[in-house]
Image 1 (spheres, helix red, strand yellow):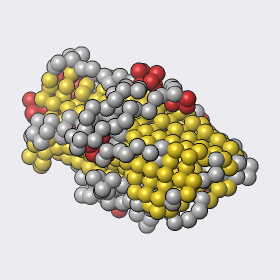
Image 2 (cartoon, one colour):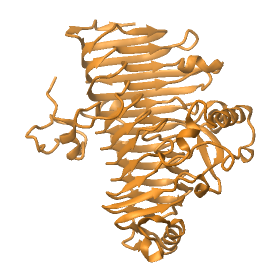
Image 3 (cartoon, helix red, strand yellow):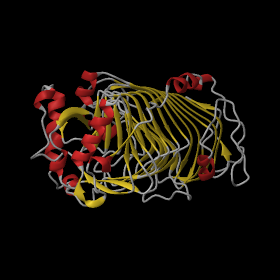
Image 4 (tube, helix red, strand yellow):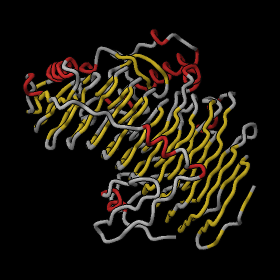
Amino acid sequence: MHPRPSRRSALRTGGLLAAGALLPQLPTGHAYAAAAPYTGAWSPVPKILARIRPPAFPRRTFTITHYGAVGDGQKMNTEAFRAAIAACHRAGGGHVLVPEGRFLTGAIHLRSGVDLHVTEGATIAFSPDPRDFLPVVFTRWEGTECYNYSPFIYAYGERNVAVTGPGTLDGQARLGPWESWYRSSGPQGPDQSLLRRMGSAGVPVAERVFGDGHYLRPKMVQFYRCRNVLVSGLTIVDPPMWTVHPVLSTNVTVRDITVDSTLYNTDGCDPECCSDVLITGCRFNTNDDCVAVKSGRDEDGNRVGVPSRNIVVRDCWFSGRWGGMTVGSEMSGGVRDVFAENCEINSPDFPGRYPVKHALYVKASKKRGGYIDGVHIRNFTGQSVERDAVFVNMNYNGGEGGTLPVSVRNIHMDRMEIDGARAVLQLVGLETDHLRGVSLSRSTFTGILSPDSIAYTDELTFRRVYVNGQELPFARR
């Protein structure tokens, strides 16, 4: 195995330059070997990346203070944001500029052609009052369509939209009621159950209205049915729920963001029913999954029936309470062709509040149904994984009483280096629906405490895999 530079240094280079290209010399004096070629199962990646192009915006600037905004952390600036965005959109697009200061606001709704640019020293602080995120909007909540409180930053059906800059988005969730809503004894539980029943029973979406008087927490940033999306450079702290959540969107770039979401069920980035997505150079310190690819929940996800596909994740740091790279559990519409490379788990250069439990975590069940076909992981390094380095579970939450067929296949991992985990693999297929086609190659695991746990798994292969200094047999079926 070739020695690797620190992940911090690697991220500063901006990641892979091109398939087969050399990375520039790193500040520490180390250098990467040539980038792994995009061959075999990875051969679709260059074409995927060629289709992903961040939107460009005209050189027009609309500064929110020109529309009445005051950055004192006290004045509500919702109308100023709305006016600046409307003016930018009417002019044919450009940059809505947030200057230095702390700007308190309710929901921000983006329009086509608008880049919301948060400058260095600027913070958009979102109100802790749920009423500031009304009226309700069409959204998706844990994989089920409904009307609910607006996401803090929201766009529906727009093209060429972005949130960028070195500034901060502060969800201020510690100040609002969101945490009390989430607790097991809190009021979110009945609404969560109600929405799931509505989705399973096929209640028309127009009748699934929550919001005022209900307790489903809104997402932080959501782009719904959008095309050409960019989220770049930001620090995002204390969201009320999932942080960056593109849904049914195409050509999405999430790059160089830092997410600090350690309150509760606050994933880092959740592309759902999306295609052609690049997540790169990001740092995730989360209370749940870091990156979680999704495609809808249960019968409602099957009704919509749109898969997530062509997802590329690279050069990221993962510190989170559950999975680093995750697929599911809301995956009823299907997931195909996920590629993740050059990521670091529980880095000492980026210590999180919680250690990642699984470097790769795949979640499915017979209640969800659907399929996962093609999850490809390579060049993951890390330490102190709390549970199994890789957990593929087709019996998530005990199957949840479902009867739908579910398929998980083609899970491939290459060149992983993990120091410290309960086990390397926990693979849970079903007697009725076997897990098929799992491979692990050219990888080294040290500090492993227990043997693998394998159930109802076909076509499991190892090649040049070392666990605690011992090479595993070439293949096991």
